[in-house]
Length: 178
Image 1 (tube, rainbow, N blue to C red):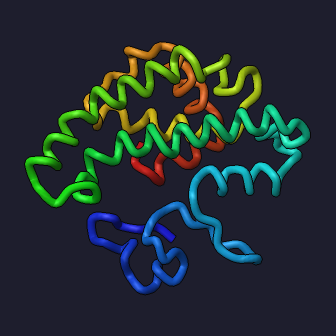
Image 2 (cartoon, rainbow, N blue to C red):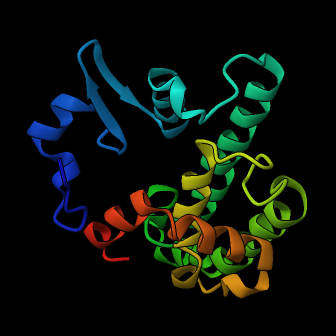
């Protein structure tokens, strides 16, 4: 289901029946609905182990992968969200503008950390593409709108370029106007 957030479609009874939080992602499976990106990504990795998108046989490496996805979810996504959705955190318009004014710096700080500490190789976790890579890629597409030039982070920019070249990614990008 494609949602128009500007039109408030995430708050329609049809979508709220899928995810009462009124948020994405929401994946409908035969066993029920999965929400929250780290959970959904891990589900995909476990459903398709032959793809090798997570170190499912190594609890420590899997926990490290989940720590990266949790950082992207709880820190980077929230830093970005203050620009388009500051109203979630404050009713006062001056407070909202203050939060929005910090987005570029907060996102730059997040990506400096990713560039220097989290990005372990050509892919997020090293030499192998994992479920963290498309997640980072998505957040990298937000940088320009958040007032940050991805070129400030050459390793992240190269990661984005490399991921963008994958045939599966090339098939999906036009659907999202990228």
